[in-house]
Image (cartoon, rainbow, N blue to C red; front, side):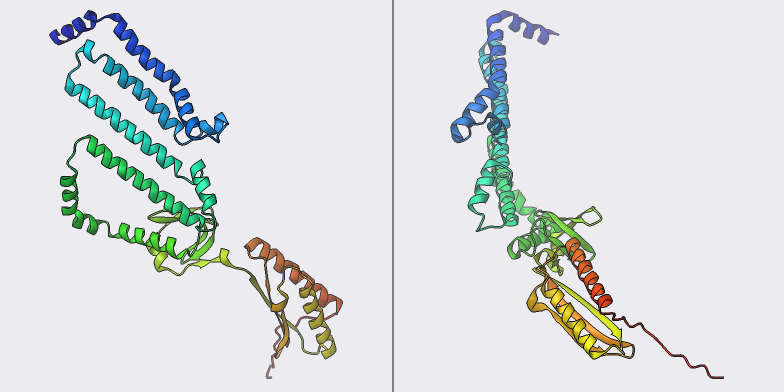
Length: 354
């Protein structure tokens, strides 16, 4: 109670004007924090004329928070003498202000290094022909991690923590950490292999082991695949690096192959005409590669004469490929009907011994 009475005595002994000024400083910076942030970003982003674009900048929110904290800090500094605030408390307040400032700057820098940020889009346009999207995303992630690592070291320096001793301590525990994080290290190395070899990129359709789907994201540790059942699978990069991955998105063409077995008593002239018409039909299709067309009588079986139809189409995605196959099959059936050629069926003669 005596301490509370002493504190109240200090409060009542100072001039009311000091408290009003301190509160005014806080309110002033709180109200104008957005304006100050807008003006600073406007100075550094000369080409940006739209207020919405400036407010969506990666630095707008961190700067706004910084000015609010700055107002509180300046108010405490102003009241230091009237309230007779202890030096140790002021030292804690100053360190807290510096730490918050460092973290907000790091947050702003990290947010400016994303593929959706203005700076990220500019960098992407300049490196468009030198670096693909997947590698570019990986580089941005590394840059953001480095920014936060530097921020952590700055915070430790502000807290006056002995970095030399900390690094030495980490060295002593390095063996234990390494043994405990072998799988993580393998996944990180696997991620690095993926970015170097580039077996696939975000948006590609891949198939490996029991997984098949579209790549949604590639992180340091895992690769996220959206399956055709719409589930999301996180596959460790180490597993992908050791597996055989089929990248269906890299297909330049798809194969069409079928066998027609016509009745064995079909006249040779009719077979030749059938072959010519099917070949011509395929040549007239824009989606079919002419130099890949093969229509041949390749086998004579017990049931009939086999006609091999073999070609490639530029319809690579599965839906359009199925549509292409359907169209070709329908046209082949029409040709068979027009030429009155019957398909042979597997027949067997059974002799019954009395």
